[in-house]
Length: 482
Image 1 (cartoon, rainbow, N blue to C red):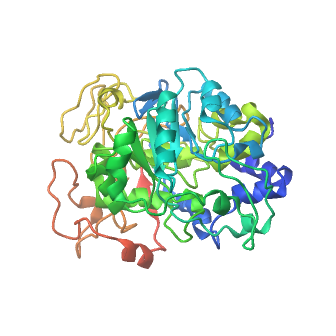
Image 2 (image 1 turned 60 degrees about the vertical axis):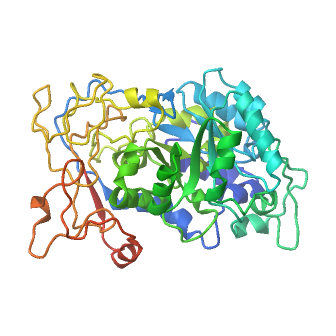
Image 3 (image 1 turned 90 degrees about the vertical axis):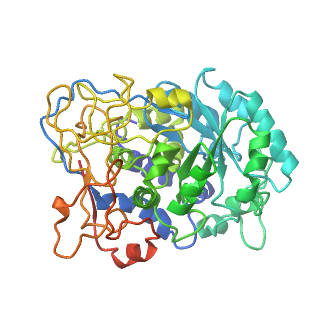
C-alpha cells in the first residue's frame, strides 16, 4: 500500500481488483455520467492565490460538526453495501475512522446492522445515520427509535433520490440475488430491466416525501436533522428557514439525475444568493471531492465539512488500514502538493450551526491572534466575537487585507503545508454565479465590498436564480483569491 498516494490510486486498484458487479455498482452514475464527471472537474475552475510569509508553525485542523469534536473537517458519506469490498464492510470503515476521529454516516442500505457498526468504534466516536424514508412509514418510525437507542443523535435525510437513477453500467451486470441490507432489509434481484442494485434495492423509498413531512420527522426523531441532496440555493434557504440543523449539498455522486449541477457550484450559488444561511445552519458538501485542495476550497466557500463516499469504498479494498491510509495520506492532511506547486494556506470560513455549544467553540484562528475582518466568526483562542468592522491590522501586528466581497471567509482548518488565508477575495469579473456585474466603466477591484454592515448597491446584487447566467458564462473561471 506504500505506493498508494491518493484517492485516484485507490480507485485505479479497485477497478482492476473488485468483482465486475461491485465495480459497476460503486462507479456507475446516471445515464451519461455527466454530473458524476463534472463534480470532480469543476473544482479545477476554482483557483488559489497563495499568500507568502505567514507563520504556519502552529496550525490546528480540529473542528466541530453537529456538536461533535472532530480532528478534520471530513466525514464518510453514506455508502451502501460496503461488504461487497471487504468482509468487514462498514465495521472496518468505523474502525478506520477512530485514529483520526472522522465521523461516519451509516447508510440505510448498510450491509451490517447499525448496532454492529457502532460497536466497532469507541462509545464517544461520532456517528450519523442516513435515512431513506420507507413507503411503509411505521417501519421508518421504528428504525428512527432504534437509531436513537444506539445513541446516534443526527440523521441525514436523503431527498435527491425519490426515484432511482438510471445507472446503466449497474443494470448490465447480473446481481447476486442473495444480497440484502441488514438495516433496511432490501434484497437484490434481477428483472427485465437488468440487475441494478440501486434501482431494485431502493424500491421501498417513499417518493411522496415532501416539505410537509418535516413535522412528522421531528415528532419521531428528537435529535438533529440534516437534509441530504440539496441541489439549489433556493432549497438550501428553505432548509434554513424551516429550522433544520444542516444541509448536505450533494447530487448523490451523479447517481440520481444526470446534468444536475456539480455540488461545489451549488455551494458557490449559496454564497451569492443566500449567504445568510451560513450563519443559521451548518453546510456540508459531497460529490466529486478527491484532493485536499477540494476540501480547502469548500471550507473557503463556507462549508463546515466535506464528505467522501466512493473514495472510502475503494480504499476499503485494503480493509481498516486502507481507510486510515486515505485519511492520513497527503491527500487530506497536506493537500498532496507536488514540488512544483504552490502551497496556499487557509483562513477558511465556517458557518454557524444551531447547536449552542458548537456556536461557542466552532471558529478559531491558526494565526497568532484572532482575525479582525468584518464577518469573521469566533476564534477558538479567544472564544469571543471580534468587532464587526474592517481592520488593517490584527492583534499580532500583522497587516490584514480588507478587500473582502460577498464570500469573505474566516479562519479554520488546514494543515502546515497550507498557509493561513488572511483574506479571500472573489474577483467579480470571473464568474456571475458568485460575483455581481461591475457597473459600466467601473473597476471591480475598486468596488465597494459588501456583506455584514455594508449596504448592497443596486447594480445586480439582488438574490436571484442565476441558472441562465451560469450556462451563458460557462467558459469563465471562478477565481478564489486567498
